[in-house]
Image (cartoon, helix red, strand yellow):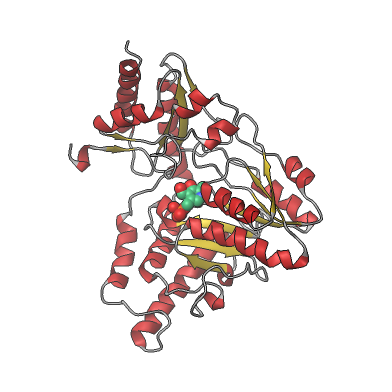
Length: 383
Ligand code: PLP
């Protein structure tokens, strides 16, 4: 099957770079190749492009430009926020961190690494829809709590967390609040001021930007301990030659996404709801997560007796590109930690299908996906 005939419905894993983004990036991959730290003209021009991108990204997030730090991806932003803050505040005797049990592995594995260094981590349990409450956070905060990290929306089930309320609790308690907004920055409005966010992670490839570039927003005065040591880039806080083309592409992608945010979300939701309605007609099927507080393009379903990997392989043969969970977890045979956290039995946590609608999906594609999934589940069940 040719690439053009495939139906890509895994937009939570990554998204294609848009024409507008590619166009913005190209000059910086060709003629304007200067190192942003160099003092001569092509270096200064690259520097200016980076600073312009910083201002534009800051504007979308309602942040100060000087509070935007460029990173190599969302994973780096998460690692930096968690490890850098914990290691810095340990000197003040704050060695406790609060997070949830459905975070992305970039957070969970960073938290585990900190536990191995002697930090204590509280993993708040989510309810059957994947939400934690501000009250749970309030009850878990201790005098030695350094940081709370709760994701804005989950990558497997799309559940949106009450981050503004959680941020308010943290602010009142004098505890730093980080949110992983990798799944939301291109889809939901973000206002770091109104939402009481101290640190926030973004990744460009989730909103039609390039792979390998991200942001850690850090409120002025909060500098996690450096994670990348080397040159004096990013005002001495994050070393490494700037990915100029990537940064410029990310700014364009974020602005493009923000410009059409509401209509794009409404379009995605219509397609997602159609998928959900039709796929629920398959006997013994259910939707996982929260159908009220949910990202507009996300649908996570389980089909009794169906193994997720077999379903994905069969769908792939039919030209449907979907996932059974997070991009990094698929390919592993472990059941989803997110679905287990919702309380799903092992079999169901193993057999989920995640469809994530993006900017370029159509209703016609949705109909072909419905047909393929319905047929595949029937085949796998041997009926
Ligand atoms: N956090 C969440 C919620 C994600 O979904 C992902 C990617 O799937 C990441 C972090 C990691 O981002 P990146 O792929 O840029 O490293």
